[in-house]
Amino acid sequence: MSGTTILIVDDEQRMRKLLRDYMIREGYKVLEAADGRQALDIFNNEGNNISLIILDVMMPEMDGWQVCAQIRKSSRVPIIMLTAKSDERDELRGFELGVDEYVTKPFSPRTLSARVNAILRRTMGTAADKTLEAGGIVMDKSAHIVTIDGNPVDLSFKEFELLQYFMENNGIALSRERILNSVWNYDYYGDARTIDTHVKKLRSKLGDKAALIKTVWGIGYKFEA
Image 1 (cartoon, rainbow, N blue to C red):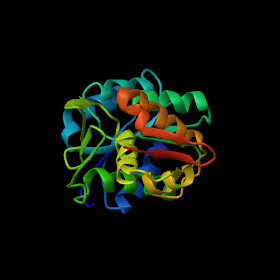
Image 2: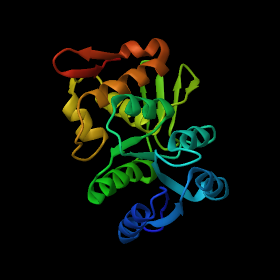
Image 3: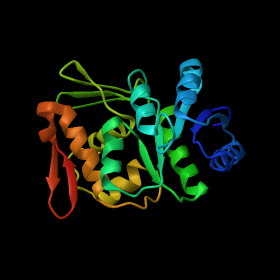
Image 4: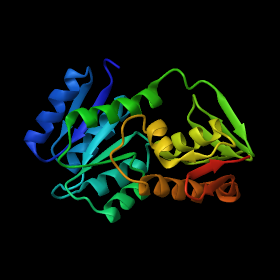
C-alpha cells in the first residue's frame, strides 16, 4: 500500500519517531501531531488524504478521546487508539466513540503494523466489490454502506466488518476465536469480551434485525436469516 498516508498523534517524541520510522519502512507516508489540537488542524487540512489514524489517549490540553469524538462527527476514517492503561472501562469507551482498534502500551511495533495492514487491506482493497443481502439487510461492500429496509445504518469500520463476516457465514455457528482470527485478520492477543462488546454495539444499531445475530451458548454467535 505504498503512498498510503497515516496520521500519528502522540505527545511523546520518541514514540512518534518509533512509529514513524516503522511505518515508513512499511511503505506508508506519515503525518505527525504532538497534541490533540495539532492533530485536528492536520486532519481538517489533510483529512481526504489520511487513510488511518494512530491516536494516543493521554495527551495534554486535548486528549485522544476528545480528538476521536471530533473526528467522528465528520469521518469514519479508521482509528487505532494507544493507551498506557489496561482498563475495560477505557476499552468500552473507545468502542462507544467508534474506535476501530485498541492497543495497550507497551506493544510490539510489528503487532501494531499487522493491525494497520489488516485494517487498510479491508478498507482500501479491491475485493470488496459485491453486495450482500439477507433478512432485509443490504450491504454494499464497495461503498461501505449498510441499509435496513432501505434505511441507512451508521456502522463503524469494525462493526461493518463483523456484520459482513456474519452475513457471509449465514447459518453457521462461529466461535469467538474464529471470529477474532477472521475479522481482525491477525493473531489477536485479547479475550472474548472484545467480540461480545462489538456484537452488543452492532445489535444496538440493527434495531429489529438484531435478532438475526443469535448467541450460541458455549460457542459464540450465529447469523441466521
